[in-house]
Length: 414
Image 1 (tube, rainbow, N blue to C red):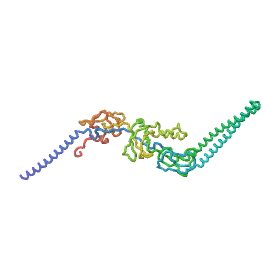
Image 2: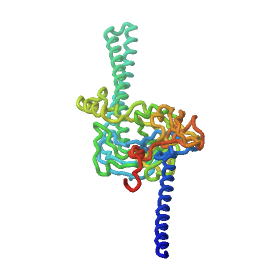
Image 3: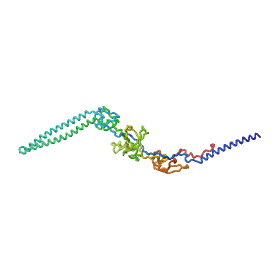
Image 4: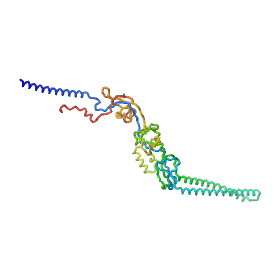
């Protein structure tokens, strides 16, 4: 009897264990079924919240710093540079002596011109004395003729001598003017041997050094390059796709490569009406070969128009030919409703978009939204959404979207 009771006790324990395992399996399976029967509509989707922020739409351009005035100071006469009075970096005033050129030739030319002028003046004085004598002779012949003591031929000869002398004096007077011009030209040429600064500025480059010989016969050789650095010009290259949206007077901010965190404010002063490539246009080019090559290159290259900014530079922070990252502000909005620009699709260009909005019950509905400014990261919402609403901006993993709807594997790998 005792053994039979023990056997029944063992059987009942096994039955209870099996039943417990089955119950747990049923419970887990039911839980999984319930969860899968309640699918989250936003599962596998990327969402964002409509919130307030600032949006600024700009045109990006690359700018180049240049002095407000840039002058190549050159020589107008040929000769050897005997003295150079400046060096790179010097700040000089207008009319300051920059360089001197050997002036022996110019001094001799001036002496020759002055001698010629003096000779002609002496000839005129001689002619004037001759005129006085001729007028006296004419007066005498006139009186003799009046008293019938002289002949008509002598009177006419005296008149001709007087008139000829007057003509010689007039000719000599014209020669004096010509000689005076020659003297002034020689004086100017002599003055050109002393090269002075045409304006206040800083010496940016020394092109020809002391001892070099310059030839000004065909063109004026450059001695130094002078620039005014207290005011700079930024020439910003605006692409042809953006220039239609840009106009003078718009606000601009820029930074330099050495200090990208500092924002400098400016105003767009003007936009040049043509690109710099116009100088190589076939209509103005003197070489047919160069014009054909330039035409083919211009048709295949990007076109940029220069926007001009005036920038104060009292501390010399901005240097010649520095690069600036220029942002031309097309529009800005403060504390407006915004959504990520990636959610707009083609609506970013049309001003209207259809966005998927997650409702309070979790359901997703499509809604028409009016879009304003778009900076490429965030976009302004003018109407159609409220602050705090959730929108769908894309699929979390589009490649796995189709596999997410596959039925679950049977328990136990069956």
